[in-house]
Image (cartoon, helix red, strand yellow):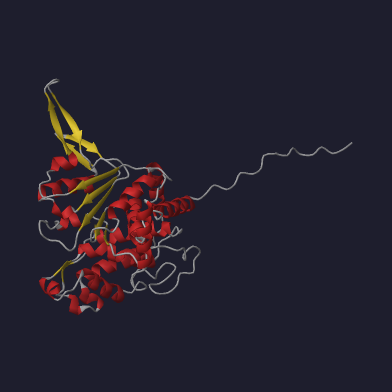
Length: 368
């Protein structure tokens, strides 16, 4: 009599579930690849806009006309499946043109609320510094509170929501300097440069051929799930300490051996500076396929997070100094391995990071 065999399960074992960090990295890499089919030669700007989307921040783009700023946000909205809105800021713009208004309907004897163009996922505020103070005040509520108040009623904006504002650095006629309180609400200020000769040749060829087409790859809901992954990315206390020291060096340069900068910076970075650096570094780590943040991530994005938070003195402007000149000095002076909370995570400021995935290619170059 044969011995009975235990029953076997004919169903093959299910593959291990994909980790959130792997799913986010794969999706975001695909998004960047798809957008680059249309937007050529602006890899750093593309990646920084995606960093802002993953952190829920806003971006201020500064560059001359014709550098694909509008094309970038419009293409991203198509790939992400979000709603794209564009507002051309002019001196005669009023808040109702931006946030909406209440219209009296004589046939019903009631007011009807008409929402403005800010109610979308991606808002392009073109030439933002051409609008007067009342419009900037209305936009400030939109950026900070993610809501609009009309006639005593509050309307929440869709999520995700990103303000991508542009300003032209070569024109000052008919412009209004942005209030420091509003500028501080931007997570990043990105300086958009001309593309290389090879990239510009590709741009011309695409324009002659009629341009490329992109398709939707993910949904806004999936982007929000990836945002949760970014927030869960591990940040060592030493990395936080490094970000705080960078901001502190803009306020008290003498503590870091930069005595000659004491008369250069009138106002240093606010606490939103280190908060923004750490949050942006979390998003950059996910884009690079890691679930932890290094000081290299902080250094890569520190100029974009801090340059618009510095107020230079009149003497510094007269000498032709820029916030980037100051930040280069600050990043050379602040040692990421120093501080009361220990060393860095995985790498130092200049040494290689030998952890798996650390050498994933990325368009964001480290700021030396």
